[in-house]
Image (cartoon, rainbow, N blue to C red; front, side):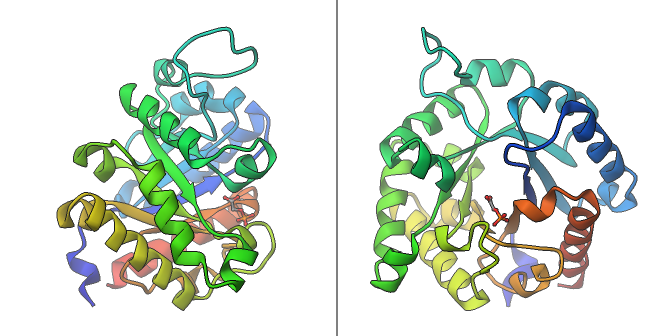
Length: 264
Ligand code: PGA
């Protein structure tokens, strides 16, 4: 397999959801930094964390080794949108990434693909790299509509992006039925979806763009099952939710990924 020839840095992403105070977050990042492998540059660690922790985390993290991302952004630059946070605000504090379209937000706050697309464009305008979540529900999978759903999400969410913008973006494939359920997708299911996503990106952009874009799997990834998800041509990283809340578990997950990367 041509894994070694790949031009895509492997991602180990933590989604803290609505957990952790600033001091807990700082302790977490300090513990991560105590690991020597952080300096080896083998993988890119991305922590997607609550808004309140972002500023402090950007200062505490190690640029290029531990990167910081938000979990959401509003779809306007400025305005009377009480309680919202905009892309220029995230950019000002040095936030490098921002996750958008997480299935929780899609379900609870009715964010659709067009809304996600507006956010993708705004993030790009302010130099923040979007991490775009896509994935099918259990009903869609059972009806055999998984690939149709992914096709639609890709066509709408990534519409209007330049080739450079698409190559920088991260696609986070998270089947909804696998999020927080303990039901991790099989390697075969994940690889099929990732392969399809890459082919679709090739169709919408170009072969070069598809070859460079990182496609990451998320949904019930844990330190003890992560090895099952690694040996695949089209999986460029893992997104870890609940299991990333314990820094020791996240360290074990990252260590497993690094061991794998070094072995190929
Ligand atoms: P999970 O969450 O790892 O707890 O399934 C993944 C996510 O919400 O990104």
